[in-house]
Image (cartoon, rainbow, N blue to C red; front, side, top):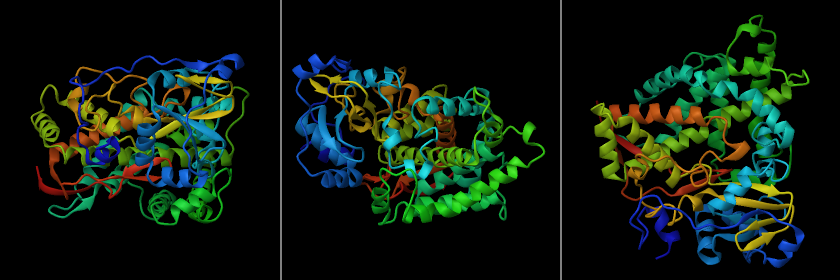
Length: 477
């Protein structure tokens, strides 16, 4: 049976090596000249029309990448969301070369992603070059160091408030419950709200609109709407309709904040970036503020929420690591923190919410035994990297113990991307996951609704549990 068939079932791969973390053999990668390019073959290409490849990738990315890895090896050519024929790779040496390259030599593919018309072309997620570095510098302070410590109480309070509402003995999906927690946290950080926004406020209306927008993104017509917006800076059609209400609310919040007499003393993220000035003394326009707020709200809560849902989807179907975690947390064991960290690291390895990233090389580039010309998009399949048998023996098994006493490698574990594009909110996301995972393990006995694991569902650039991570609370403690 192939890895494609085994992966969704979460079973160990046959013939796996005995270790828990290994190493990939060296593979040359990086810029080359035209003469070397001429001496190298191009990556083998998938022989399907572009539309078929886009549809397959968009609907079943898990099967797409594993099937083509099985057929073509660790590098192949494909046509997809981005222009031209892309190359796809999953070798750590290739990733290292791309992540260490300058933004001019290998700019991000996020600039061409389906999120561009939703978040705008100049947000910290979609901008490239100097523009990206400018936005990153403006947004970096609220997501590091002491700022994270200030969020921890907010996270704990949001988790306690939400967990108390969960029913006992009745099945429900974890993803929307986790989104309620992470949305409260990110909105609290952005707008300076203590607790959940009060009904009747603009922030409460925005919270409701964001949750409706996310629900709409899972409906049958959402994938078609996404494809229709590819290559555009501005949304239109169903995407434009879906964004109309949240956009209107964000602009009203920005206008109110600009006129706030206490703006200069406020410490929330919106006020900080509103006051911030670039090296040439410029401030962000309303449009730029809107793009950053929407980026932080959407990217800053939905990915973390689904990663938590995936963690519990894995735990409730793997009794040994589940029991070890619960026992350590409830006993306040010395190794509880390490077990929490290892569980989250393994969940992000086995079910990364962002399964693909990439760069577009501005010069000819080598990928192992292949060469690609300048202006080629190179996709990095995080899914494939995280399931390489040479890096992670028994790659389809959920084995948190592989991380005990070990830190994940920079180019082998990629849930937050890497290089100059590494996720700004990584530290906050990890803090949220640690606190929420620990609180659930401490308070609740969770079980799966079915023995069969949930498959992945692909929405925009994310991979989420197909049924939201359904569980049953058997008892409270």
